[in-house]
Length: 326
Image (cartoon, rainbow, N blue to C red):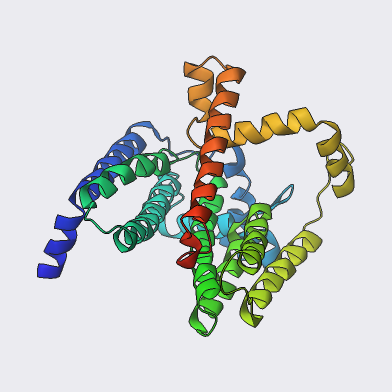
């Protein structure tokens, strides 16, 4: 009981923020969500029919939407049908639960980092600073539901994989992080990624390069190399088994050519993607009148902040305690 009391006492502001955001989103879900499948939520309906007819196969569960393999969403949809009679609010609550877990995991590591590195007790300020981060996390919940439910769960599994990878970078002797990474990254890529794994692979390789060039312990080791190779194999297998029919007729190299030839548009798309971290599409269209300049300025600001955080990550030698820059 004393342990629980101390947790509440030392994290009171953040706990209140969690409760506030959760209650607000629950109220929103109950007031606004309609229990009717829509958009890509209609795709798995034939799968449900086959389930009740007893003719369901793995091929039916392995739904495709362009480059997206929707095994995760198919399983969620099927379990929703069996357990809740296909209540579409369930997807919204899965969104909420997933973002709650993401917010909780990030807070644990966020606070642990500051507590271990600050000589003075800044507990209240640590909590206050995290509430703004928590607001950004919860702004995505309950989301648009449908197949994006899968991608949100995928984000959670990738964060778990990143934690294991960070532990391997700091301590190559333990086998537990290695096994944990192999399992979590496989679940992420094969079941929940939906082909959104380009950034994941890039971040792992970047961490290895950073460790070999900057870190005091430059030796990479078998576990880290095996982890990256395992990730490459999973991604290669995914892409091989999920051929994509492009609307414009370009293959991968053709798309790279477009990327280089239309470099100005590529940069704008990149900045707009960064801007979406704090500005969602509804705010842009309804409140800002689709003002492109505001979106790009916001993206530039976030890019500068990101680059500055990487600069401080290096100058403060945070890599001694964390290689993977969360």
